[in-house]
Image 1 (tube, rainbow, N blue to C red):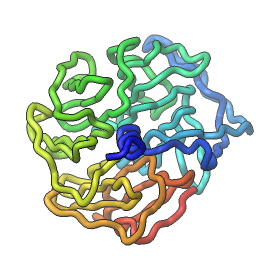
Image 2 (image 1 turned 135 degrees about the vertical axis):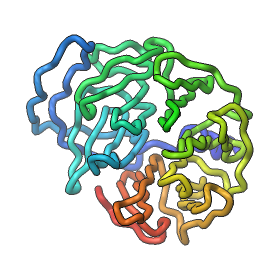
Image 3 (image 1 turned 45 degrees about the vertical axis):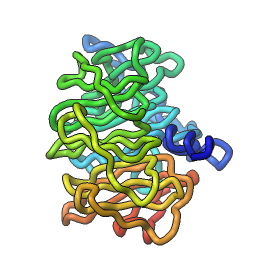
Length: 292
């Protein structure tokens, strides 16, 4: 593997810098707070925020909101418009837990009262405020996923926690670029330079999936359906938990963020950030709808 390809895999693709940037109308950032204080609501603002990199995209299955975790903080996408939510935090890792809480990691922005790095933080008010659960000043989880038995993250070491506070260090054959946990079975997937690794015992042991090509980003839509991004920009889909795969007809571009879920009628939806655009597909990437 050449050095550029490996770097793209390990960082989840190149950023949006140099290829254009998403621009959002952003409310004034709300300071994060400790649990015993409540900030005033953020006023609306006509100022625009240029998003230089999207680290994660997901649809909150409970509310239907599309969320973008970015270098400039959390944004909600609706009707082709982005609205900034909460304080400016470089959200390197971001996931929504089964109970609806937002979990994240990364670096605090100017004026944000969080440690550097933030460790594992949580929001119980849809991203308006954040509090530190654990490892503040210690961990920057670039890969982070939540599932039925807890949370797993990679900060140079693979760590798992059942409650987000006490952590156990796991062994993995190769460093993960992205992590995903099946919502029901808890099966863990990790994209690495040596292939997609799978664990059915909460990360204690791993086997390697046979994929058409190296995969940089990966997401479970349900307990059987996996959506991934090949390093050539094609969307890869498995409907049998990774045993077999299909690829989109054409590459979709330089994909930097991916989220997958199922709609109310059971359709598999993938949300993609590629080449400074936000795309939606319900047929494995063969056709797409531009959301932004």
